[in-house]
Length: 182
Image (cartoon, rainbow, N blue to C red):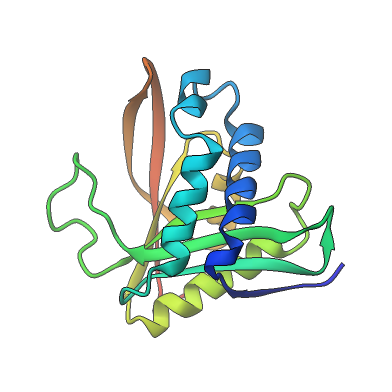
């Protein structure tokens, strides 16, 4: 199977939302309580990704990895979203100022270890450099297999947080990569 990374368009929102949902269910069932899934249904994800695909604000982009021949009639194999770092409530106000944030990187279940995640990661790094970000940050839920992927890509832990999802404490790690050395 061949694939390529391209900028997402609003027409991709449905497929992006499905990838987001399927990946979330596969990765986070047993980590998040069922109410967390009910609180962010497929329809809400569809609206979110339609807005993001239409967002042309400086420093933001949404990219998709698409199969040249659709898999199960769905061409989107994964997606990544980049924007300015969103300082978290528990962080100092200037934390990550001027840096970029990998807001999302999700693959369809069954599409791991095929170079798709690495291709999206590289596209995000390239875009972050074009936008002038000196570094990139991301948040990853503890225990998510993506932690190993981000470490292999050179992202190092720089912080952590515990938040509550419908009564369940969830630990997440902030990782950072310096774009001058990546």
